[in-house]
Image (tube, rainbow, N blue to C red):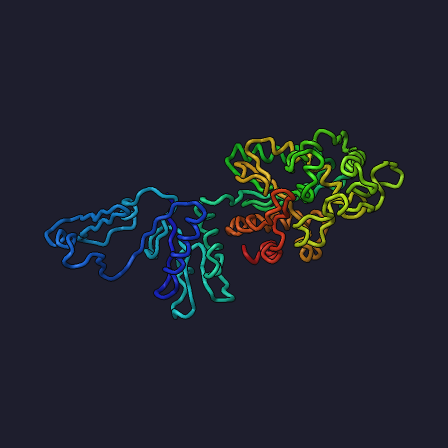
Length: 456
């Protein structure tokens, strides 16, 4: 049974926040009980009532029982009961929220409003893990939460108590590459980089081939499983295509069917792949019966393929497909998934990455967001877009690919441990379960602040 406190001076808004938190957290499916501490005399009974007469006659404990609820009243003598004694009387629940008991040894969030005229309690109590306030500009060593954003406060408490999944113990961000042939031995741009962030720090690793990178990712998940840890692994390519594509290609409106279809056809021996030929086959399937080409476009000039044009020629409305996914309305800089060649050819990265997603997703301890309803025990895979941090990446020294994976891994790990990432992961369009979603799209401000350390 988890216990978390809400403390603050009189008239700070504790009870209002408690009421809203109970509604918010029970609305998420958790069972909640509450404890309220007061400094004045309290009596819930009324003179003349039967139970009052029982107490007056000397009964130490009186239970008033009815069909829908019962109340236990205890005549207590001696020192005020400790919180632990009160908690011992409660039936087991997921979470007990305690209002008051500000000096007891449990974790708490402090409610503070400047109008009370009191100083903050937090600086003198390391168990105050956050401050919920409507005051601007508070510079504190703990997170400052918006008192009026009940969901954010609930996210923080659930993450702190371990009731919410995640927090993640580590974050990996993978900058994928569809290059044909091994990358240079010397770390270079336009190759595979993996940024990592956890409680021990940050790092960036360079890989010359997709096989080497996938081996590292698998080993990382194995270690997490052995240690009882959970990883968030972000990949910078689309996990799915515009609505309708999966059903047209595979007969099933499920992105997993596309991953499986590609895994059976993409070859990548020695980092040399057949992605353009596979795209040519897909175009032939999708455009069957249409005079214009299928959705994919872009290829090297010397590669002659009958169904894959070198430039965009598809009539997407006629094909019954959108050119862009719904999430890309939030991220207009993102390239369309159909583009396979030249700068920003994310379509090629997807063709070469989705077979790996299929293989990783076969593990029972791995889930893929937002398609799987429950987070994986050892790893959650997600689509990311490092260019959400473009202003910070532009200022970073060295290889751009290296900088962006480290910055994004740092931001996601920090947001996870502030309890904010769970809320961001809930912010998806309904169509996201078919088309996929970019983790953090529309939340560039919090991501950039976390990457810069302002929220740490």
